[in-house]
Length: 249
Image 1 (cartoon, rainbow, N blue to C red):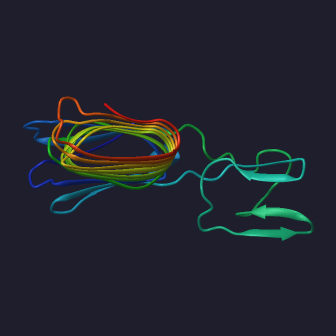
Image 2 (image 1 turned 180 degrees about the vertical axis):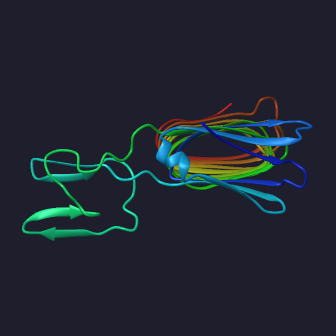
């Protein structure tokens, strides 16, 4: 395990920079010391860092080395990124980062995922800019939450505003006091509403529970839409689906 701590005075933003991470972020009122606890492959933990500026705390976790497997004439990168290396063809063989790819594993790479548990003060902003694989589970109370992910499950509790852009993965949001703007290419969206709420999916269902007379917009190409007014008859609701059921109740 690797642990980082920082005083919470003047801490406004937690930024997580990681390609492959399963993280749970918790918030606590009157917290005096923020904590990051990481477990996973030792070589990745050794390269991890947490840098504090005046109001920002940035956790950086290096990407795992790639795992290359070749068989039946095909070569695939199982996990990781090629960084600072080269890909060449030598005498008919594929050489990646100095390793010759054969019918066995050329680089042991990925291993177990990094898992993290983080505790920050309630109301902290949370930013996860480029998560390629993993999950973000944040059941607490936050300021502004911004997440961009490729293959990850996202679950946010309550925030002032939430902006999520996902490629593959489901998104769940409890509620927000100002804005919810979430989109995913392949995945379902399950969210409470905010005064301004937008939910967009290409392939996936959308469920929205209204918490006020809010403006709610839901769009999906392939999937069902289910909006529950929850007693808020004056909520402004706009929905559209190409292939699926569209219901406002």
